[in-house]
Image (cartoon, rainbow, N blue to C red; front, top):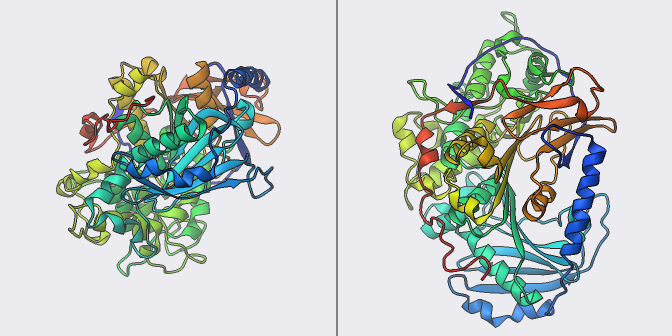
Length: 591
């Protein structure tokens, strides 16, 4: 499908920043673009049709009765205890709190210790179940928000989320402590907790409404995106639609290689950061000047970072100068290493690529320790070190009970890479054999920000490239799986251009239930300008005529920079998913 080349360390030139306030709006349009108003009209019509074919289903039992549902205690494989079941009144919401329908809020625990929250609309359920993923190393039950598309669909989802089988601790490396001496908790975090929640939630839904869900959906980003892919790979018959945002599918190499690399290459002899956050605006400005406007319009946004040519040396400080408006030679080296990604002494990449061009202003969240206007600050204060690399290497890398190395002792070589396996098979979700999910009729939307500062998007692109080839080519793959790469967006949200990540649930429901595949995202600038985003590997290109503020003035072209990034773990995309396979542990999806 795509031209396969090795990761390129291409360096270009120049400086200056441009930014734009952007709001992303999901539109389902033809692959050739179209006027937003017409697309919205088609969506409204499709939604109205779905609403009439999916009437609301009232509760068949009281909310309080769920707390004393004795059969949950004897649920095979997943005995469950409900701590509380209370009715939450409907609320119109306000500026800080989203709206919600009246619902029954069920809180409980699934053996051995997966805490969950299940929210069941009492009067407005339309037969759909939505399972929401977690983030990071999880360890907490996150707050849930009823999807904004509920109003368009004429009813509400029942939805649930969990803590992936453990409670995380704060402090240095606390997020990974659960995995040190308990194999079962490792498996729960890897994937078993999500299957358990699916089974238990469906059981309670069936009791409460008198019927199981008609359709089941999964939505997650980061670790939640990894969970989403685990469901497609290990339990292909469970979910009808899966949304995997910025998926941490290459979890072991991400934590052990990429995040460790970014800490190590940025640490000086005294343990302090070489590149500090006060230099990032100048670096980002130079990248924008060099690579923005690649859609044919000067808009201050990099549409296709894979085709960006930039060298940090273009803003290297004059000899003897150290200023926030330029980079020292040592800082230039660090930036180059960030962009290139981790490699072994032979130059082979240990992760498929590095941080993308355009992500610079987001480095202060993951890669760099927080500082006040620069200054000396230890890299051990960076999230990459204390919250991601160290918990993985110390507590998840090796078999249960064996303490792994500190990130500063990790070896970037073939032996180090291979030491991650087979343990990494528990949490990696790299299988590109989705034949069972496709045969089940499942639909998959993968998405990621092109400026992701937490998980390099090149890994997601690599996965989709191999998936397309294994599933018979791009066109057959797009019949059930599509990838959207959103310019300017950081990890799961935020943006150097002010973009807001769109709700992917609505287009997924349209695809699953109305057969209308999402073929365009429309990026809206303020109240007047729009830009399209097409399924990868297509990018928008200005037609040369028509208003540059109208998405209809653009058309899709194949990215000239689209490529597969060869790395030492290429073979992992072809291996079967480790353990569990597609088994549903005895529970039929509609049984």
